[in-house]
Amino acid sequence: MAWALKLPLADEVIESGLVQDFDASLSGIGQELGAGAYSMSDVLALPIFKQEESNLPPDSENKILPFQYVLCAATSPAVKLHDETLTYLNQGQSYEIRMLDNRKMGELPEITGKMVKSILRVVFHDRRLQYTEHQQLEGWRWNRPGDRILDLDIPMSVGIVDPRANPTQLNTVEFLWDPSKRTSVFIQVHCISTEFTMRKHGGEKGVPFRIQIDTFKENEAGEYTEHLHSASCQIKVFKPKGADRKQKTDREKMEKRAPQEKEKYQPSYETTILTECSPWPEATYVNNSPSPGFSTTTHNSLPVSSLSTLNKQNLLPTATPQEAQQWLHRNRFSPFCRLFTNFSGADLLKLTREDVIQICGPADGIRLFNALKGRVVRPRLTIYVCQESQQAREQQKHENGDGSSSAYFVYHAIYLEELTAVELTEKIAQLFNISPRQISQIFKQGPTGIHVLVSDEVICLVTVLSVTVSTAETNDGYHIILK
Image (cartoon, rainbow, N blue to C red; front, side, top):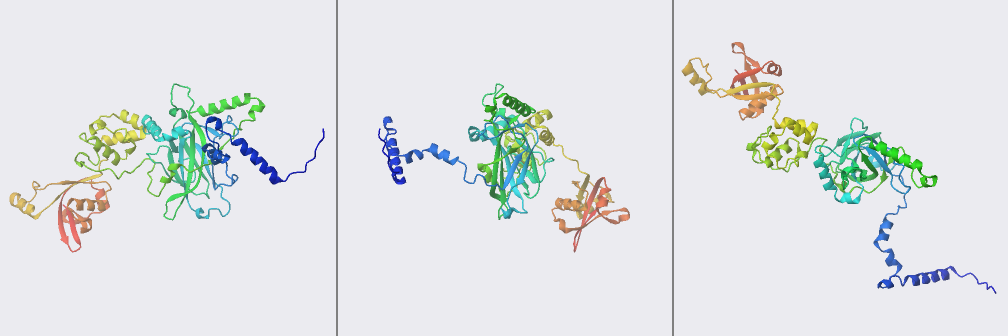
């Protein structure tokens, strides 16, 4: 056999030959299925390749993020190497999230010395549940009236300012914090993963959640709408002590695996670092409008009508369901309006204290029961006042000789809460339809007809007062004389 030695071909010749052979081998793909021939560019344009391309890590994978959030809870050891970490939490237990400033020198100078706003939420990890999040949360609210999915443990938190939780968003809290100062926020998750499983026969595998934090800086208008950073981690929530038992079970299973099998799993870390992610789609609602506090909300769009059956303090039995809804809104019971949609005033008033506490929880239940029963604070001082007219005085003198009778006077009650002269002035002015500025001084007629100037001390010494008012108009306004 003779060997022939050939000279090396040029790179261009080799590449052109490979391309021709590669195109030729692809030209027949799909012909046996009845489809026309297509090029490799058509294959790469398929959605599946586009999706994989979008999931590839960016070139700047090792970039330093401006902030870092660390959840002080151990990760599970039963997670494979290339999967996302999973952390187990106990229902209702307080867990610390450390808010760390990772900025390099000179990075984001516009937030130096200023506050940023972070919105913390617990959301579904599964895409199927994300699509039906509203229905899932409404169902949870119906089964757990008065409870929240996510709460802040404010006494344990450090460095957070103006914490807020909207009663209509059970899974969201927000707060301000200074990146230059130590900040730790403690959270409590009150729902468990098995509450959202399709079938509930016991022993179901709970659905995973996500803890996500979106941070915003203040714009020129003073609104926190400019996005800075977002990060999240995967969690599962168990009944109290359940997370500890699950962590122990996973650790024991890993110890029984062969060494080569253990290499396929991540080690368990003492803390969980939230990884960077896209902003939550609903995070754009953040603005500078007043956010309700932990137990308050405002509803200004409700029509106010038929006030004849709606007392400012008490709910009357004759109130219709619509009027009962208005009463609940005005008395800060908006989170429970859906539960009492078809309740009339009589229906609400028939509820016992135990019924209301069971529906609304202990705190709001007691408050609602007291409001329904009209338990108002008694005034500190009651003054019965009537206006003395010249015609009445002449008529009394004519009939009685001394004008001592009060048959022709109609008395009005004035209730004082603060026991101050200013409060008395305002109440008298309101009673006689004059401006408080028109009343220059108020006197109490004392012994031998002397006029004693009414001060805060004088009012505090009075228990119940029944007087007639004589007004004397002067250049500097009315002088009110209490006889």
